[in-house]
Length: 460
Image (cartoon, rainbow, N blue to C red):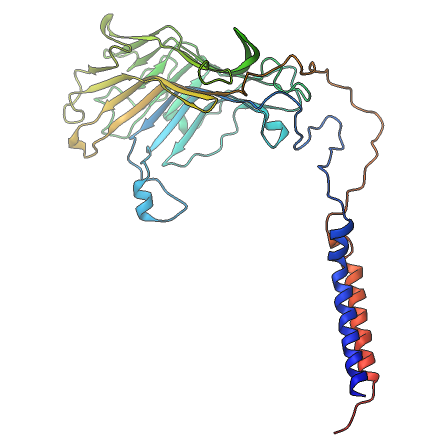
C-alpha cells in the first residue's frame, strides 16, 4: 500500500511539473522571432531600417553667432553622483549665459532610428541660469528619413520676457533642410543644411546696481540702436551649417564635407555713447572639414578674418593670427569698480584633430572680456562674450562614398488608397500559452492530490 501511495504522489508531481514546463520547451523548439514591424501608414518612416547605400558616413557642422556669460567661472557645477570631492573637480559655470543664433547640420548613416540619418536645426537663442537650461519652444527642425524634397523656413521672433535684459534679438529667420534617400542613402544634395539670420541684437542690457560700468549701462529697456547695452550687433548676422558629398580630384568616391559659415559685419561696445568701440570684421570666417576616407588626403580649411578695433574714427589695433590679443582702456570709468577699465579682446584659435578616417576642427572668431578689479572680491571677468563659434566633423569610408552603383533617388510614391493587410506578429515567448498551460498543470496537480487522498491509509 505504501508503494501504491508513493507511486500516486510521484505521478501527480511529475505530471504537474511536465505541464508547467511545456511552454518553455515549446517556445525554444518552434517559435520564430518577431521582425521589425512596418508602419501601417505608407508615408510614415520606419523606426529603424538598414539603408542599402554606400557608407558608413558621419558628419556634423555647428555654427553659433555669439554667447554671452555673466560672471563666468563662479557657480559650482552640480553632479548626479552627489560626491562633493568630485563636484569640486568640475569646471564652474556662469551666473547667467545666453547664446545667439544656432545652426546645426548632422548626418549619420549608422544611426539606429531612420529619422536620425540626416538632421537640420536652427534656433534663435538659448538661456541658462545658474547652470540650469530650460527648453525653449522657439526654433526649426527637420529630419530624414523620409526624404524631404523641400526645406522649411519661418520667422522665429521670440516673445518678450525677462531674458531681454540679457539678450534682445530682432528680425529672426531660419531655414532647415534634411535629405536621405531610402535606396541611395547620402547620395543626395544637400544631406543637411541649416541657416539662421537675425537683423540686430543687443546683449547685457542691464546689470545689478553698482556694476553699471560707470553709468554706461543705464539698465533701461533695450533700444533698436543699442543705447544702454554693452554689446550691439547693428547689421544682419547669419549662421550657416551644411553637410554634403563633394568630388575629389583623382578619386572615384565622393568625400564627405561639413562646413560652417558665419556672416558678421561687426560688433559695437557701449553703442551710441562717447565711449563706443567698434569691432569690424573684415571677411567672413569659413571652417570646412573634408573627409576622403584617407587621413593623408583629408583636410581642414579655415578662412580667418581680420578684426579692426576703433573708437571715434581712430584705429586702436588689429586682431589677427600675428596679433591675437588687444587690451582696450575705457577712460572715465570709476577705478574702484574696474581695474583701469580694461576691455580685453582676443582671437579664438583654430583646433583640429584626426581620429581614424574622421577629421575634426573648431574655431572661434573672437572673445571679449570686461575685466573686474580685485576690490570687488571676485577675481573673474564681469562679462565674457564669444562670437563666431564653429565646429565641424566629417568621416568617410575608405575610397570615399561610391554613388556610381547606388540607385538614383526615387520620387515619393503616392499614398495607397486601399488598406494594407495586417500581418500577424510572430510568437516570440511563452506568454501566448502561459495561461492555458498553467491551468493544465494546476489541474494535473489537483488530480494527483485527489488520487493521493483516495488511496487508503495504513494505520500505525
